[in-house]
Length: 453
Image (cartoon, rainbow, N blue to C red; front, top):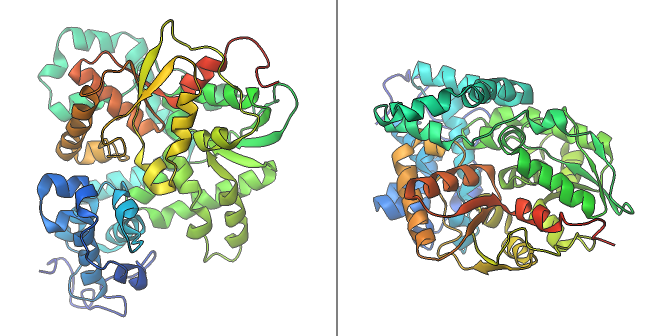
C-alpha cells in the first residue's frame, strides 16, 4: 500500500518505477537474481527471522517491485533494506554474481532522497552523514567529550554507583562499546612523512580512517611502525577525509562522492606507489572509487588509478617481499589465537588467506580455527545502534562460537568488529584479549633493529 504522504503526481511511476534522482539501481543487476536460494543459509537476518523478506533474494524482489512500479518507497520497504547488515556473505555464496551490496546501498540512497520519514530522524541523519562525517575535525570534536568523560573519573564514578544498571540497555551498550583510554587523535601526532627504516623500497600513502585515528591510536601507530620496518616510507595527509563507507551504508551514497573526489585528488598529489589502510571498511570502499566515479569524466581515470593502488594492511604485508619478519612472540608464553574475519575483508574484498598468513608468521602464536569465522559479528557500521536487538542476537551466535574454542587472543581487522567483539568478550567475561592483527605483528617485530635486512 502506498504511503499516504505521497501526492498523486509523486506516486506516479516513471521508466524506473518509483526510483528517481541519483543512484537508481541498475535494472540489469536486479534481474541477475535467479531466486535459487543459495544465499539463504548465509544471511544472518534470514537465519534469525526465517521470513523471505529478510533474505537477500527477498530484498532483491522488493527492489525489483519498486523498479517495476508495483511497490512505492514505503516505510515497510525502507525497514527491510535497512534490516540488511550489508555483510555481503550472500555475494560470496551467489552462483549468479548478484551484487546485493550495490543494490541495497542504492535502494537506501533512494529511500533517503525520496521517501517520507520521521522529521527528527531525518535531521539527525543529515547532521551525521551530511555534515559530521565530512571532516575529520568534526568527528574529533564530537569524540572530545568522551575523552573528558573518561579522564575526569566520571566514567568510573557512574559505574561505581551502578547508574548504567538502571538506564535503558541500549544506552548502557553504547557507553560500554566505546574503547577505554582515548587520547589525542593519531592524525594530530603522526608526522606527514616517516622515512623507511633501511633502504626505501616503496612510498606508501597511509589512508588513516576516521575511527582508527580517534579510537585506535595503538593500532594506527602499529601500522606505521610495521610499514616503516618493511622498507616503506609512509606518507599521511592530515587533510584526509572519510572514505565514504558510513555514508554508503546509511543511504547517503549520493553525498559520498564529494569525499571520494577529495581523497582521489589528495593522494594523486602525494605521488605514492600504494595506498594502505588498516580498516577493512575503508579498504573496501576505496577499492570501489573507480566504479563509483565511473560516470564522472573528470575523475573516471583518476579514481581507477587510485583504487588500483589500494591495499588492506594484511593484504599488502602478505604479498610484500620486504615485510619485516617477527623474530619473537610478543607474549611471555605460547598463545592460541582466533581470527574473526571482517565481512568487509573476506566477502567485500575476497581477502581470506593473507591475514591468516600474517598471524602464523608470529612465533609461538598458534592460529586456531574459529567456527563460522566469516559470519557477521553484528556491528555493521552503526547497525548495532540502529538495530540493537538484532545485532545482539547476531553477536550471541558469534560469541557462542568463540566460547567453543580454547584461546588466548581474538584477532580481527576492522574497528567496528574490534568494538563489537570486545563488548561480547566483556559481557561473557571471557579471558580473551581482543586485538587488531597489526598490533600482534608490530609487537612481534618490535624487538631489535632493522629486522628486514
